[in-house]
Length: 159
Ligand SMILES: NC(=O)c1ccc[n+]([C@@H]2O[C@H](COP(=O)([O-])OP(=O)(O)OC[C@H]3O[C@@H](n4cnc5c(N)ncnc54)[C@H](OP(=O)(O)O)[C@@H]3O)[C@@H](O)[C@H]2O)c1
Image (cartoon, rainbow, N blue to C red):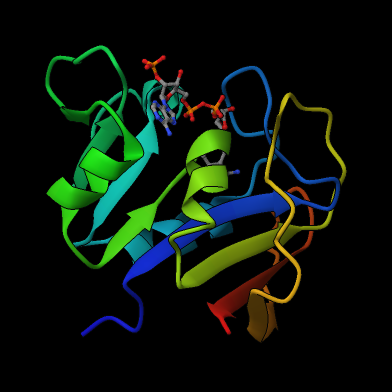
């Protein structure tokens, strides 16, 4: 039983950067494991560029790619709304920027990894609307030697 219906999951740097040149702007294997643990067995909706950066559907997760151009070997939907109808609930929204922007109006939960760095980048997480979400928990992540900076796991809920 999940404790959310529609959840955004994102790793967001202190300067709100989430992407650079079609890839992640930071190297955090511990956060990738966290992402895998949270999303395993679930449905995840993502934009075309995010999917292309992964290269294939995520193993043991139903992956729905929002794009106006159907792709081979992965389920696609022409809009976020149609993706969400197909996905049912619960569902994760896995980026990029527009999926997050549109998803903030729909999500009841945000799983945010606050990445304590300010990398250069070209893709940004949107500002959280005032008073709509409250931070339920904040836990400093254990930084392994392979993680290039510190990070904090936050869970936000719609008020
Ligand atoms: N840090 C993180 O947690 C995180 C998470 C995800 C992604 N990222 C990074 O973010 C970057 C990719 O994000 P992005 O914002 O550039 O691209 P994106 O959202 O992954 O893909 C954009 C494309 O997806 C489709 N799309 C997205 N939202 C749509 C909507 N609401 N309605 C219709 N179509 C929609 C469109 O595809 P068509 O043009 O084909 O119609 C659009 O051109 C990469 O650098 C990636 O590594 C970071």
